[in-house]
Image (cartoon, rainbow, N blue to C red):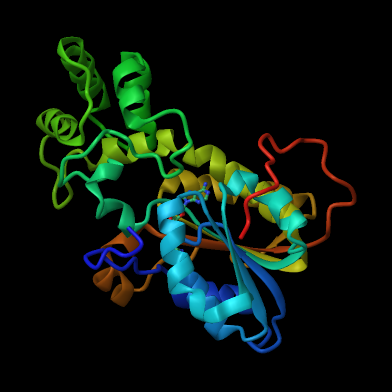
Length: 322
Ligand SMILES: C[S@@+](CC[C@H](N)C(=O)[O-])C[C@H]1O[C@@H](n2cnc3c(N)ncnc32)[C@H](O)[C@@H]1O
């Protein structure tokens, strides 16, 4: 993947809005310290941050080693201003401490999938080209999409497709999946996509299996849990006055971010920089279809935690930064 000449470039969403959110009411020259990009991906936001804020250093993490290798190459011209690390967002806090990076002045989360993932059918994300039913961004995760499709019971599958994918035909699809897997377990993406398409029917421009595939991807990568952890890591890692910028692609996720930030704002931990989330303008929506559902929220950290909070971070490996 890192050297693939055919790979599509991942276009960073809401780029101007991210820079504006980190800048706040100051100037780009005034911002100094570390910004964490917890989902560095291909490094599009990271590059813009480093170019825009000359006194900022960037700590970038991604759970996907192949994507991270791409970022390592694409950000190499920034030398020691960049430290990259393979980690899940939920594992980040002890690494930031171990590297002497926290407390930080900014924390970016741009969750979800990278265009690079779709270019490689063997990763199992693509609906267009056949591949193993995998969908793990972090290859050390035990559970693949095939495990879910072949082992979850019908009701859980239906709930997954409905709640995580907004698929209104979720019950019929789950029933069909369970009947089909009794004949032969699913191992590849296209047979599953074809079956789902038959049940879901056509729905406009997107492939009819898109919503179920999104739901499976979210479950495999525990995206909801990662977001929950990510907000806690941001809270712990940011200095007083530091800014968290969170981009989501799903109303469920945005609702969750809003709820958590509002709750913690009432407790004095955050000041919400924008009451309503920012979305893309017309030009960005036209140019980048992936941006259409993107929403950005920004919150300013109000005070440092007095002491380590009672709740432990479940998986806290401290090694592995380079
Ligand atoms: C939307 S892309 C980020 C794109 C990036 N902002 C850019 O401009 O290139 C999301 C990236 O986050 C990574 N990712 C998703 N969930 C993650 C998590 N919980 N922990 C670490 N990385 C994650 C994915 O592997 C993917 O590369």
